[in-house]
Amino acid sequence: MNGLIQKCAVVIITLAAGIAGWWAYQSTQYDFQTLDGETYSWNKLHGEWTVINYFAPWCAPCLREMPELNTLSRTLPAHTRLFAINYDRQSREQLDEMVRKFSIDVPVIVAEDTTRLPMQKPPYLPATFIIGPDGDVVDTIMGEVTAEGIKHRLAQLKSGAS
Image 1 (spheres, rainbow, N blue to C red):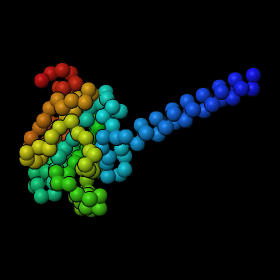
Image 2 (cartoon, rainbow, N blue to C red):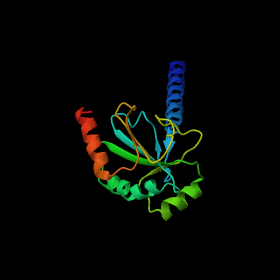
Image 3 (cartoon, rainbow, N blue to C red):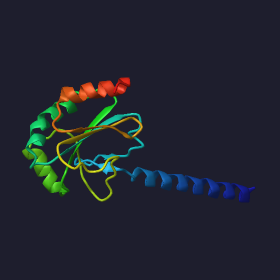
Image 4 (cartoon, helix red, strand yellow):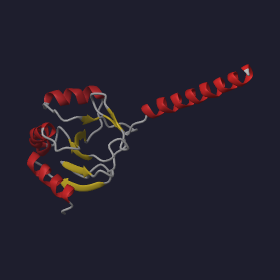
């Protein structure tokens, strides 16, 4: 009887260790990370609408639209996320300085080799992408945007209108 209990204990401990290892591995996997250290996986964003805006400090229209994006980030529709990503890859320190300098309130994605986004880098700026709840890009807006314009477009997309 003791031998059976020991074998069961070994099996239970082995299963628990395997599950703990799998959970630890899964918790370290992500598709992108923001400057504030938050990590995101497209699997976990499933069911949410996501807006990603490419910008650069040398792009005057990008800087003009940033207050609009800041407003949008404070008034996002339900089940919607907003992120910005710098067009040129920069260190965290450079991004942090830029965020402070231009008063960017939108969560900024840190572009790294491991960053996975559902779109290619756009050919010019500013560029805004709307990703549907299934993780596919459903709209691309090239040029300046406004908070109301993006909200209107999201409402159209959510209602199924083109």
